[in-house]
Image 1 (tube, rainbow, N blue to C red):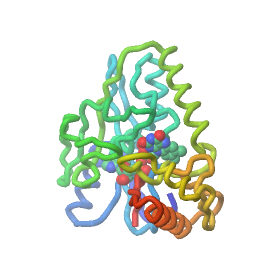
Image 2: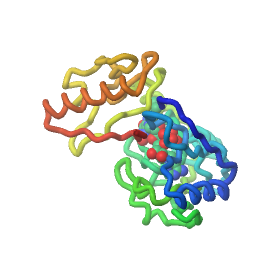
Image 3: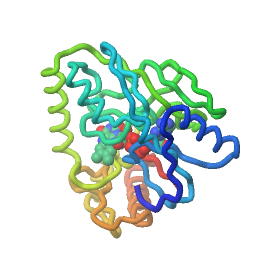
Image 4: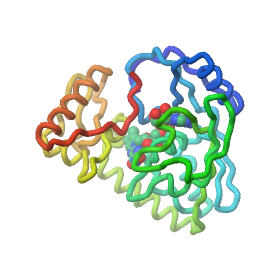
Length: 267
Ligand SMILES: Cc1cc2nc3c(=O)[nH]c(=O)nc-3n(C[C@H](O)[C@H](O)[C@H](O)COP(=O)(O)OP(=O)(O)OC[C@H]3O[C@@H](n4cnc5c(N)ncnc54)[C@H](O)[C@@H]3O)c2cc1C
């Protein structure tokens, strides 16, 4: 995240969350729902944000977990591991909330959160809570029906698979090791900036365009993984935009590929 936020609302329960959305929609006011903010860049603080940080209840029942949107992915990974439940290990090392993960169908190592989602309770534009089946969520690569911003995620039911704590732990550690080896996890970032194009990898194109280490102000294209821009100190939105535009331009020029953002940019 960058920029200053002027209004941050933190509903305390799902009823308040729905009511807040209803009020904004009724008055045709712009707003954004924010989870952990780990995948979002903010230009200025004029748009009110509804944080899901207090919507953090969850309950396991056998191999199912019912979770409110504000629960951190790391918490779900840890709790599933303790119970020997498999399916969400790929999310180890991914920051943010289950709400953000469902919104963008987060994934890694060939697995995606959509594979665990059974049902989602959504808030509609009138502030009503409705249950939607996974088939209605239009999941695809880093996308879901929620990108249309006509519904917001309140809670979801995940189905995991029975395994053993040691096996789940082994998979979790392995994924985390691979991630830490390949990605600049010790530097502040918002993750991969661009989606992978139809063929190939965004990071590879950025690297082949000679942009590893390219920097403007406080933002640098990571030398470890060219898909990440890291904050090397005092990064501003303008620094980010300058690096973003240059990377986009040079990849388009060299490979005729128009990269698409994976992150959310709040203008
Ligand atoms: C170091 C690092 C590594 C990462 N690795 C991966 C990876 O391997 N795979 C991957 O897929 N992603 C990765 N990410 C990206 C990101 O962290 C995840 O996708 C995460 O799930 C985003 O969650 P969040 O709560 O922080 O989302 P936020 O940044 O808060 O929000 C992201 C989007 O979701 C929307 N949103 C959030 N909550 C709701 C809601 N309740 N209803 C409707 N819309 C909502 C927001 O409006 C915004 O558009 C990584 C990020 C970092 C910084």
